Length: 324
Image 1 (cartoon, rainbow, N blue to C red):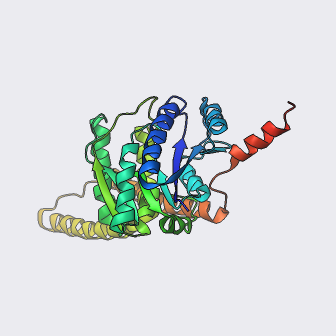
Image 2: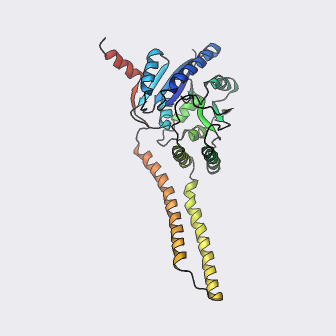
């Protein structure tokens, strides 16, 4: 029986990009079907879009039985969309791709060959350039990868994309981690398996605008650090010990200056500066603890990662109920 590849496509306000993506992915899948005898399904996950993304997906699903879709009750985020796609994918192999064609579908044949012929479990992609991105955003992205790889035991490749092709075993391993606070790049690395990295240059969006602002990327990076490193929790201990040593040094200096030179101890200005400094450090450390506590709080609540409002099956049932 022919093997099936599931293409998971998270979508948020991608009405302009989806037709371009569908045209390209169907072209590539036709070539792979002829070359390798593979079957395909396209699983679009509408992450609570506010434009016409859902009507576009309904139209595609009505025309092409390979097209499936899940529509969330609201915007749950890309991580939830990826998780929903993995849970509902039926394929022997599963790929995750963006609808804006920044993940080139033309790489899929090479990715499949790496798994099928070279005994890899996953073929993943990384960008070797950040052409088209604002310099400040590129700088902080590089700093994030350097930082998290120093403080975490889980290695995350610089420039790694969510675009990857995985075997069913890898997908099932990822699904065995049903955590609410998800950071997929870390999860992909944490589960292990043999991964072949394919490099490519950055590709501009085919249509629409990016949904990732600098602030969203910054908070996402913080979530990644909290999810895969406990090093920030050690900061309070390190800083506390450092300030203890500094305090001892200052006490010695003040005592010596007073006994030898008779210098009066500076009062109000130095006291205020020390209070503000130590108070700021304490609040910073409390904030770190609060971040970990908030993540724990969300986990123990046991809320679902996402809620599905509509899919291609419910669409067909609704269509069947309508009077002819």
